[in-house]
Length: 281
Ligand code: PD2
Ligand code: ZN
Image (tube, rainbow, N blue to C red):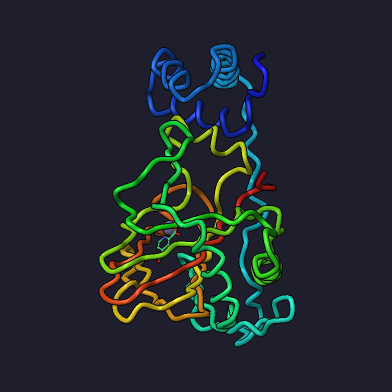
């Protein structure tokens, strides 16, 4: 088998889903080649899944747990690595939680100041290939911090891991976005679409995304709420607060479609933390 590529559980699942959806082996092989998979790996994955379909059952590990705060006892506050985070709103299905006092004013300002030096027009992960491209649906500017890149990022990541009861290493690097007037992020899902040929490549870095925490670092004067069209919810982008939502499968049935409404006046800054199934490398 070619160096650096192997049949991951994600690739196996993707191939099985495509075959179940009626795609031919030839079209799958072509999609996999376009997405950068070597022929040997593609053929081995196709053969393996075909074999499984004929007799042996393919074990799909159940998701043991999901990220999220401990809401037992309906707490108004949660001590997260020394910060008293407020629980302001909770929704069970889909799971959406609005937190207050998640970041101090100083932390928001420090994140913005450090991010400003590296801002560029936002890219999104391109699920056709697993690479990154400019996306017309997202007109903000952005950047990523490495995990633990500086003191404020490291502190915040420890807080998030404690609050959401999910290992720090399972989190992607923190993303910072700036929306100027007119900028928006059209409604989308944060999970990676299992039907896209680039998805197995993306999933090799830590599996699926399971949850999102959007934190508001600077509030605009008007507009810029985070919207959830399927459930008629709009979260106001108040500095220091954040909205958490989780999705236990990569499927629209999770009703986690969400977007950033256009900023009407002022500038909106957010930090986003995505949580994966496994260690994000
Ligand atoms: O900035 C937002 O409100 C927003 C909305 C939807 C951010 C994201 N998605 C994201 O970073 O995924
Ligand atoms: Zn999003």
